Image (cartoon, rainbow, N blue to C red; front, top):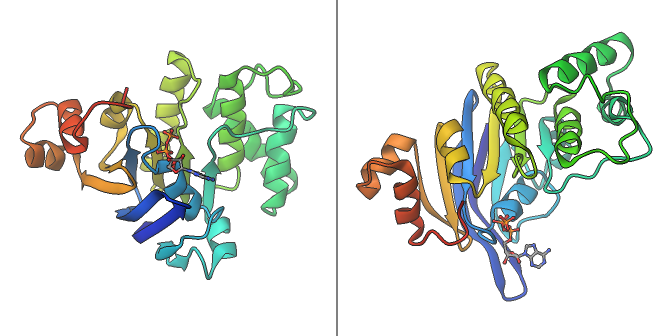
Length: 243
Ligand SMILES: Nc1ncnc2c1ncn2[C@@H]1O[C@H](COP(=O)(O)OP(=O)(O)OP(=O)(O)O)[C@@H](O)[C@H]1O
């Protein structure tokens, strides 16, 4: 469970995040939707403790992101924007390394890696060195790494970036499964269709502010639009930067 309260982060004159509040529940998929530069990544970076907020606060499973950052980090799995992986290691070694950092070892860790390789359809490259991996293969490794310790909360920054149609479908299945298992899933996207297809709760961000927040039905009702994509555009006031 993630709760953000009036988070703010400025970079000089740029108000990247200017008072963002929302909650993301367990067993639900929450989408942060907004055009490029809206403040999605900066919001996620504060939540996964890479940046301290200038003001405001947030909790993840009751842990405060500023005062209890270690506990927050233990209870989240994160797919960062443009996630890097170690090219000299194989996919399996990349995932194992992160599992070990989270205290997993031995047979339990091997079993978990095999499960993830099956779930993410990584079997044909799991033992190859990561140098030269396609974008989709890299994203799968980064995702397996984010999920290896079975985190209760999963934060994904633009997870379908660079994925082809099949890989995107695979990722959707993974996200649905995490939801069904009761995880809290929060992901950012500027792709309207993706958010419309997956999310139980949608937080629309524009110019560092929450422009609208609700279930798909609530967003349709509040904007008076039948079509969810029209509702998004209406909430933001423009379709610029959305796909
Ligand atoms: N480290 C930084 N230094 C300076 N400005 C930054 C920094 N990080 C973000 N910004 C600025 O803050 C604003 C919000 O950026 P952010 O990356 O959060 O947007 P976003 O919604 O994730 O966009 P995108 O979809 O393009 O990834 C942008 O104007 C960006 O240029």
